[in-house]
Image 1 (tube, rainbow, N blue to C red):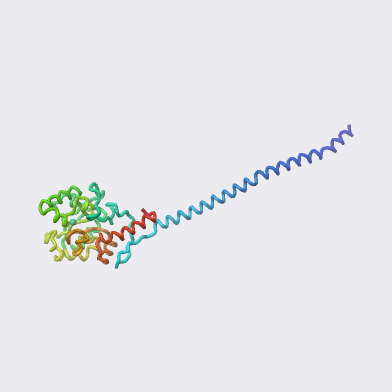
Image 2: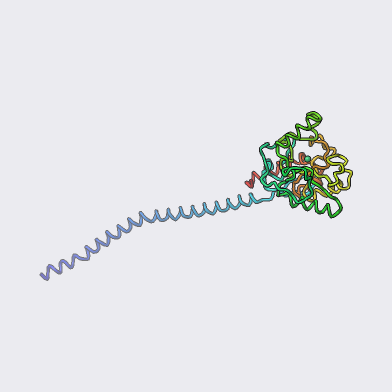
Amino acid sequence: MLKRLSRHKKHLPKRVLLIAALLAIYMLAVAIAVVPALLQANRLQSQARQADEALTVLLAAKEAKRKEPVYVNLPGAEPVWAIVEDYTRPDSLWTVINKDRSIPTSYIPSDLKIPNVEERQDKSTQERSVRAVIIPHLEAMFADAKAEGHNLMIGSAYRSASLQQLYFDNYVAASGLELANQYSAYPGESEHQTGLATDISTVSRQCYLEECFTSTEDGQWLASHAYTYGFILRYPKGKEAITGYQFEPWHYRYVGVELAGALQKSGLTLDEAWPYLQSALQTLKANGAI
Ligand SMILES: [Zn+2]
């Protein structure tokens, strides 16, 4: 019995060794199978992190490009910071409307409002309205003019396409199509439909919508000060062939103080400035700002 037991004892380490060896082989196999997978996971994680970082850099660059200031460079004038709007839309402050560039007759500005300035009281609410966005500038101009002894008055501001049609038909009936087209616009081609333009006279109605308004003190004050409030004389003398309209010393259009100043300095009409505006618009689009 003792002898058997001692033999058994003698065989025990061998079995343990075998189990240990098997265990070691198993662990080695596990290690061989798992380690590459762990390494692969680690590599993928690092790649994902790198891709994330690259995307963050890319998005930051895109965002910086989107916010990059774009300038309108009119000849002879300081660069003007381009407003971030699509100027081809009728509701843009820099929209250009003329005989070549019309707007949909269905367009009605969404923010029409009556300004707190002198106006022809016999005109409809519509025709006494302008876009709210220009009202502070218009009111400041009228108030400053008044402080200097010039009692300005709005003769006609916003006009819908159908009201423009009515005016145009009347002018055609009175003076024929060719002549009417020199001082009035087809529906869809009038700046009055944007709510950004207004015919300005004086309360006295001296030279009301007549060229001689230019020689009145009120007309002269307007001609030399309007641009400082963001308004341009839209149809100047000597530019009839470009604008397509007769000289209209009463018709003013809001474009903002910066662009109005640059136009004044460069001597360009808004029609002539259009290619420069278009170029800025293309850059804004390329930058993803619009
Ligand atoms: Zn007008």
